[in-house]
Amino acid sequence: MRDDRMAGQPVVWVNAFQVKPGKLDEFIQVQTEELRSFAQQGIVKGVLGSRLLRATNRDRALAIALFESVEAHQTWLKQTDFSAHYDKIKDLIEGAEGDYYTVEAAYGATIE
Image (cartoon, rainbow, N blue to C red; front, side, top):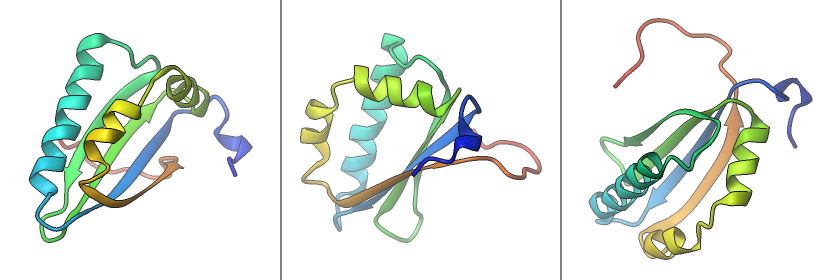
């Protein structure tokens, strides 16, 4: 359940993917293409930035997106058809789990 303290505040959406063994490179390629497509089309309203991270020693990846608010993320979800993208990744992953996070503390530079 969403915390009302998050209403109207910037949030980070994190998707943690468990990728099937030997499929991480292909998964990263598909996700990267999708991220570029969204950026080029300018269809992601309310997004402040995103990152795709690869685990160094496991078949895992994180997709992280910073949105202006939970509402902005949910509006984007309603407006975007993910079925074609899901068809591309469904055979590459064992599972995925997503959740909202708020920044509670920070130190230092961001990673590019």
